Length: 259
Image (cartoon, rainbow, N blue to C red; front, side, top):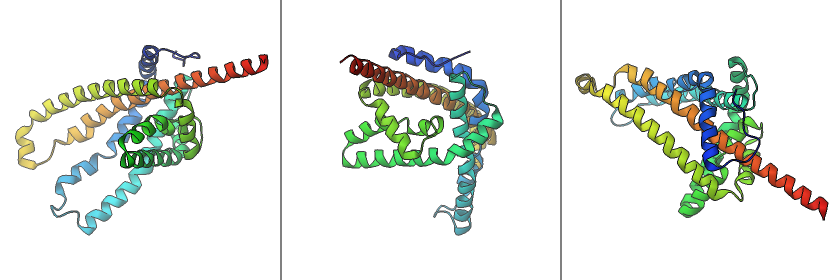
């Protein structure tokens, strides 16, 4: 059974922990990630049928309604994925129903934290590119914290900044490597889907649409792999930072007690 390390690890150790967490959590999370990605498949099929001049009022109304219906369900599922990965890493059992119920409660704070995260990065990029990059690394764990630590959106982002402070370059390096790993795997899976699409080139040319099984099967299967992998790697990094912060706090208390 996988458990989060209770001591700070090297960069290689964190990456290894992330992979092990993914392996332990995959069978508990892939279906949630698959369904979350599947929700947007009908909208993908609708795209080619929209008016070239833009959506008509009826089409726009449908898209808005579909978005409002899909969004809370998607948030619930993604929060449930994070909750299940976190539970596995801490040696706890969290049933599928329990994860979905928990996700339904934490989906809104996670969404708001994500919005604030995006706004902060946007402002930083508008002012100057460097502040945007700095903020992105400082606040990157806010979404996960809103779920795992049960904090509000603002408190989640503040906690993320506290964890990263003093470890920015190390965190940036880890996130870069994680991004490369996920991107490579996603590219490989996309290449496989492209091969399948190439076998149906005549059908695609005639209809202007991808075969239904690409949107409803293959693309969600890609998300079922890359989603849990990315979350597992980021959560492993988050817990390593927690260990570093808690170790620093203990050292400070010991030093203060001896003076």
